[in-house]
Amino acid sequence: MNETREFQEIAHCGGQVIFTVSRDENGRRRYQITWQSSRPVPAAIYAIYALSQGIPVADLPMGGVGAPWPEPPVPGCVPVFIASDSEGKFGFQCPRCDQYWRTKGGASICPYCGVKAGRHEFLSAAQRVYVQLYCEKLDEALSADDDGAHVINMDAVADAAGKNVEKPPFYYAEQSQQKQFDCSACGEFNDILGRFAYCSVCGTRNDLSEFEESTIPAIRDNLNRGAIPSNCLKDIGSAFDAFVRQYAGQLIRNRPMRSARRARIGKMRFHDLAATRRELLGGFDIDICEGLTELEIATVTRSFQRRHVYEHNGGEVDEKYLRDSGDTSVRLKQTIREAQAGVHEFASLVLRMARNLHRGFHDIYEPTKAAIDRYAEKKRLEALQRQHPVPLLNTAGPRLRGE
Ligand SMILES: [Zn+2]
Ligand SMILES: [Zn+2]
Image (cartoon, rainbow, N blue to C red; front, side):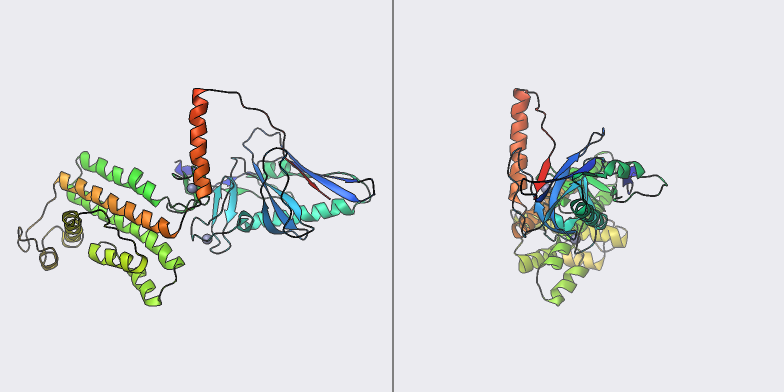
């Protein structure tokens, strides 16, 4: 994706939140909250319940047209509309690790540390201030002597973004991050710091799709275009080490274990296949060599040992290689070389081990099935729609009522 868009302020989508205060036949104050927007930018909203002091307490899922709103978790809660940025995305911030990201709205897990929480618990610091001001404004509207409409003008907020002007009250904006991806499991958009993460909607890690669709194919491409095979072998070894490190990092962060194991895995390099397999199998019941034959395991082990020779000895056989590999076809100090086909085979074997690790990891940390099922259903309907095109219906904007 476009690297130049890193860390840019993205304006709010604008629009207006309107509190319409009136009285019922018994003279009791009541209000209706409407959100409207007419700006030509992508815009989306979701709603949460907040205590009237401005503290978010629950998500408020907005069902289909005419569906009743769920009851607030405690009486006196106020429904609050949170509108997207001008790309139709929402910013979120983790209460555990404090890191920020953007997605289209259904966040349920922190992409960085993996903590699970309700969407309202992932509001960014700036959004929390907005919620507080929103509740104050509603309180003012309800305390005013006269009935009528009270408007929070988010258009002014959108207009002030990126400009060196005094920011209006309610001001906040989102910020683009470094890696934008659509989750391979649930299709949802994520924009994260760095490259590797959980999908913040369904919880599937993106490492495997990066590895099998980007990292390994790029190395294979280089190899086919004449790159030195031993360099490609080193690249595959490094990529695999980085891949395992991500999963191991999450396991030692989130699984209870003795501190000695945590420290050991934290320091590990994952080039020693036997040690890596032992650690993952013993600690987490994940066999990265599942489905590999003894011969394949020996082949991949040998490739990692040769990687060591290229990395640390300039390609000259050392005592360690002779001892560990049992390779009798070469002598001490002899220069070894790789064949293209052998490096391709190493890539294939490493991919299978990566898939085993990903599958085993998600057997422990199960992704949210609902989001993945929704995506499967959406893809099914889209395929149907392509066969039988129908015009889309216009629907009215959302509206919330409170007493
Ligand atoms: Zn986190
Ligand atoms: Zn996902």
